[in-house]
Length: 167
Image (cartoon, rainbow, N blue to C red):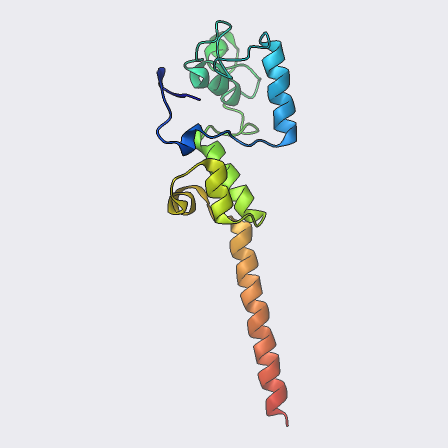
C-alpha cells in the first residue's frame, strides 16, 4: 500500500491506512476488467500510466472535461470553434472532490443502517468521531422521516389523551 498526494508517493499515515479496502462485487468486477485492459499489472497504481506510475492530474485531464461539457457535448477547451456560446450542461453532476466519494459511501452506508463503527473500519479512520462528524451527512429524507415519526408519536399521544378524557 502507498499514498499518493499531488504526485508525491509516501507510505500511508497509519497501520489502519495500510489495510485492504473492501469493495462490493460489481466494483471488483469493474476493477478487474480495468486491470486486464491495462496489461494485467500485479503492482503499481490502480489508476496509473502504462508504465505503472501514478496518474497525476486525472481531475483536470479526464474528469472535469467530461463533467463540464457544454450542452452540445463538447468540453470547454474544444468549444472555441462552435457557433454558439459555451453553456455547461446541467444534466451532468458537479465535481465535489475525491472526498465526496468517501462522504457519499459513509452517508449511504449509514442510511442503510450500518453501524458507525463498521463505517469507521471501512473508511479506515482511527477514530469513529472523525467518521461521524466529517463523513456521515444527514440526508433530507432522513430529516423528513424523523419528523414524520415524531408526528405519529404525538398523534398517538393526543388520541390516547382524547379517548381518556371522554370517560
